[in-house]
Length: 391
Image 1 (cartoon, helix red, strand yellow):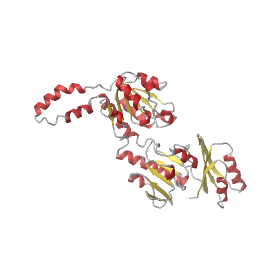
Image 2 (cartoon, helix red, strand yellow):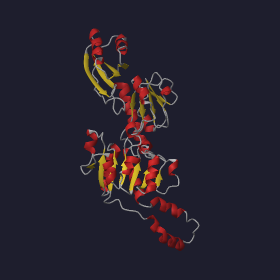
Image 3 (tube, helix red, strand yellow):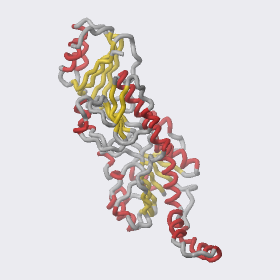
Image 4 (cartoon, helix red, strand yellow):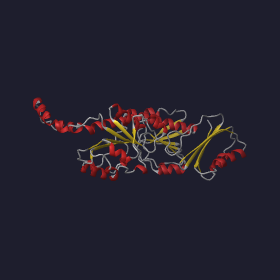
C-alpha cells in the first residue's frame, strides 16, 4: 500500500481518486511515499527518506525545493492547464476593469450612502459619471507573453472580443503551437511586443529567466498609455520600476493578482488577493490531475507533467518493472543492461528519456528472482533512485 501525505486542504474529488485498497491518504503520515500539496511551503527537511514524488495541485512549484528533489531523484509534478479556464476568466475581468472605470465607479457609489433621496442621487451620479469613462476593447491590441495553456485561452477570448493579439513565447512547444489561433501575430522579442500593444498580459512561470523580466528597461519600450496585467507570478514584474512607469504616465494602469505595499492608495493599480485559481472547479481539477499523476507514477512508473523529469509512459508487459533515475551521463544504461544480462534477466521492453541533467528509465523484465539485482543497480555511479514495481 502506498502512503500519501497531504498539506493544505485538498479537494475531496481529488482525494477520492485514490483507491483505499492501494493508497492511504492523510495529513499525519510519518513515512509517505508521496506528498500532495497546494501552496504549502515545502522545505528540504520535509522530504522524508521514503518520499518518491511530490505533486503540486497547481501550476507553480516555487514552494517546492526542486534542487533537493533532483538530488534524490524525486519526481515533482504540477498540473498545467487544470486551472487555465479559471485564470482566463479572471484575466478577462482584469481587461474590463482596466479599460473602464468600473471599480472606481462602484467605490464612488458606495461613498454616497448619506444620500437618501433617489432623485438627488440620480442628479449626483449623472453629474459625475464622466469621471469614470473608459475605452472599449474592440480594435485594441493585446500582447500576450507566454502562450501556454492559459495564454492561448486568453488569446482566443481576446480575438472573440474583436481585439488584435500579438504573442511572444521563446519556449513555445509544438503542442501549444497547435492550440494557438492563426490570427495571433508573432512578436520577435519582448520589447517589440511592448512597443505595439495597448494591453499586455503575462503568462510565464516564475523561474530565474523570468525574474523581473518586466523591468525599467522593458517598460521604457512600452507603448505610452499601455495597461499591464499580471496573473502569473509577482516576481515577473519589478514593482519599483512599475511604479515609476505609472508615475511618469508611461503606463496607464496595472491590474494584478499580487498586491504590494507600494500599490496601496494608487488609483492606477487594481490588485487582487491572489485569487486567480480560487474557484471550486479549478481546485477540483488540479487535485484530480495531481492524484492521477501520483497514482500513475507510484503504481506503474509512468511520468506526465513533471517539472524536473521528462514525460515517460510505457504500457505494462507481463513480468516485473524496474524504474531508475540517474544523472544524464553516458554509460549508466549500459551498466544496468550488463547487470541484467549477467543475471540472465530478459528485457521485454524499455524506454529511456532525459531532461536537462536527469535521465529516467523504464525496463519491463521477464523475471527477477531476488533483490540483489536492484541493489546492484542502486550502487552504479550516478544512479539516484531505483525501484521495482511488481504488480
